[in-house]
Length: 146
Image (cartoon, rainbow, N blue to C red; front, top):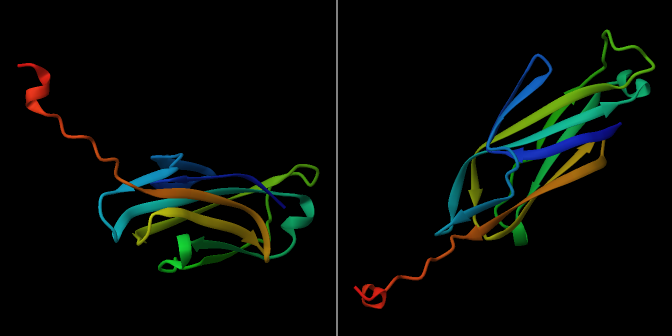
């Protein structure tokens, strides 16, 4: 079993083997004050399953890790498989996982990481950064020469 791909988005949904995302490719969020709340965040994962991976039930775990031991992000766990289907044994099968977080607390600036594992084996991780809102220097009306 391997990670085919994974990314962060503002929201995502799966239907009929396809996925639909809003705000995909999320890498940074800005906040003027802390703590704050990220209204929604989706972890989108596609797993490539070899023929031997289709036989058993597996447990996927997405572990959220805030910067510097901030407020914990609840782990998300979900079983999947075994797979019956029309994919020939000589071809890989795929499994889509979408984890939507609602009201994710942002308590510190820094790196927020999501580790993706199946049956205890880490397959990959994703990160986004919570950064302070860039402060624009105030313009002096006298400086414009008007």
